[in-house]
Length: 395
Image (cartoon, rainbow, N blue to C red; front, top):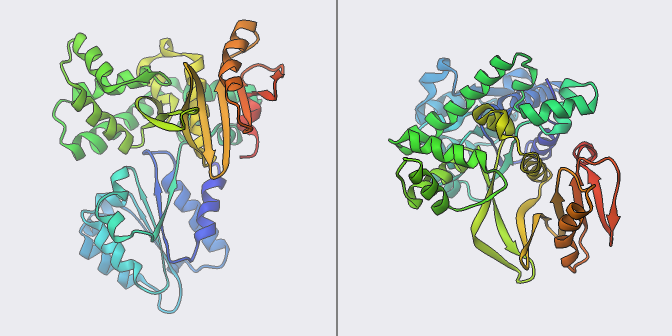
């Protein structure tokens, strides 16, 4: 079991504060394990086991607590007078109106609350209204390459080849049998679609939803629009429209299986409202669904770097400079960095094409080209970095 140090540190920083910790992320990315790891740290720090209350709402044994008043009364009975009680509610969105129980719990003295959920609706609607300014979100992703390498060990190039093909879902990383691995990821995919999207949204045409998902899986890192997807599906015999496609894309994003990168006009300093790019939460899902033929090294690399930038706390956009494009503008407060991602730039024409958009940006923020090449190249202060070196470097 690999320790998720990045996320544990976020929980440590807010421990014992009267602020609710909300851990979100796609199913099976490691949220429950993170809670267990943090609970272990609490015990090691001297917290008594009776001060820890942990409930997983996907465990049928906890069905009697799926009513918010029963849940609140149970938690109230478990509080330790005069001492801090740590309350962990895993997949809490399974409790209708859980917000009421959480809000009432929040006002009790000496209670430290941690929630997890696999749908963005957890932080929408009533919970956001009730807890405005009183919660912090910890957004989890599957394993980074550094975490994956720490888990599987061995030569980093061998680990990279496996990570590139199989993705970073923690349990999947331990599965050596290809058929078992595929079945496991297929189970995640179907659970997200059927439980987190179809059931929640009341979707009747599951085939169109799967077609939209398949289109986006196949076109990671490509500029797409709802109309383009709708026209493509309709021409293939799945009649739909851009409004339906847009709703399905939003649902895929809410389930944390899909992430959107908007476009930003660097010279005009304005956000563009169309032609976004989408990236997957884990590329193992893509190969599971589309097979080996779907391998597009450049776009897969883009996807991996996009997720890594999110892990490192950056807001990520696609850069437009004139008629050229920069793969990523990564911003964090006053920190801004520009990244191009390519499999290789050893060919002079490829190097010229990749570096041109970066040279067109005249500010002094750092600019990088990330590639699989081992030979460093630089021009006009723009540096090429090896992807593995970058992914294994400190955040």
